Length: 207
Image (cartoon, rainbow, N blue to C red):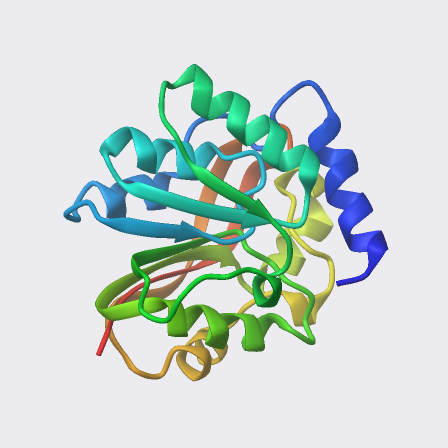
């Protein structure tokens, strides 16, 4: 991942306020509260709002991001909530996670560069145990229309970085699909996710 990408996220997360707030993503919260706790991985975790929430429920949490500034904010948030998260900085292929290590993986607005996003998904799949859960919410390809009308809703402006149902089926073919839909939702997450957007929501169990 190039330095420009890293610098962009470091700059966003260095600000005093939390870019996407400190409350967990609504869809993640709904799904996690249905599951028995275990070990969970949060890729592209940013400032930790979602991983810290999982830790408060009793999950054993690992997280990673390319941003050192994001990690520092996440650890502060964890301390404020009196929980512990294992947070690494780096790209997924540089980290030492093990096959079938996790009971769940949560991909919440984990928008990777278009040329590597599928390979990252396939790597992450190897870290999930059989019977484990994927929980996913991110902007759909339709979202580019919403962003053009209201930049405050956030999200990538590069169509190839956004997601389709077909892409997720291809990246995670060996799953029992509990939910997989494209949906218009209202976002109110911190400074950068505000307004009406189009997302893909996916929860699946690994076969």
